[in-house]
Image 1 (cartoon, rainbow over the protein chains, first blue to last red):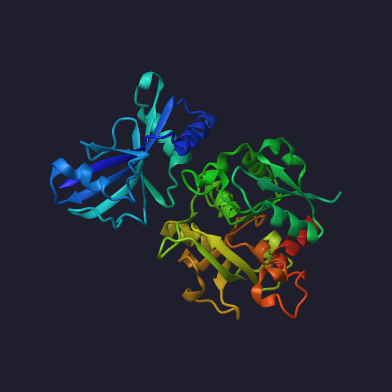
Image 2: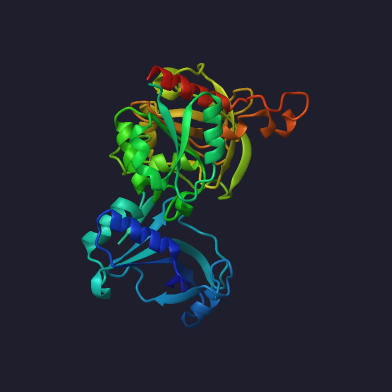
Length: 140
Length: 256
């Protein structure tokens, strides 16, 4: 069973802030930017405790600075892009019940009023900054 | 008028002093220029981007720096034929800026120095790089001997050249592969490559040959005291092999 979790910082995310500043300098009208590690897991365990099992892996999750969300969809949400490094698709992780994992960096772009950014804005952010197509693939 | 050299400092650059010092020692009139002084860059005849972790490598190594206002001047200068030397993080920045290999539009990178392989660990190792192009192919290497061998220190976590097959072919066919990793005797094989870099690449140049990106640090092998094995029986303050690339830069500026 495929399950998708997002691990994001609950402390200020300097990297996201820097990326936001750079995107604005490039002329994009982005009000807010969130970053998360997206893990797509091939999981043989129970759906009910997948969050707890991931949280037990201290190299992935630090409860002092991270929060974890189990995502319902296997695809990026509106206004979101997932960036995957092309030659690091299969990542060995030790999570009970998980036999295979893929890692993405997820970026959620918001326009004014906490609305998800439109697809053109996401595409522009991907092409101008968030993805180097020589080594990465963007899914949005 | 003698051309001046700017050693650029982005937030997080950490090799500017040794880079400035070796430039000065080979006779180059050199200033360290911080990001807040970007507007002064047009007066310089050449730019050296030193190593470090500019903008903490946020997003990707060199990605944010490639869009820093300083790079507007560097890109414009490079397009007008000014010499640009990127070392380590500076090399990552010029790749992200699309200046090398320069096979695509500016700021649309076609290659990257990315996470080391086969194990994605930081590498700190003494290496040699060997010139693989005709010296005159690149203005900065023009005064080097063919097959010149230069000692340097590899000190990076993201120094592996990666690109698609088509772009790697462009790098080879276009004569962009300036330096490869080599052994001390000049022989080249996979065991000389510390990071699984594609093509054994240690350095790239652009189409016009005025921009050179080199991943290991020649400025850290610039004086004998950089080596434990040269600390005895030699003049420890004498220049070492890494100085060669900076002498070549000085020669190139004299010709420019």
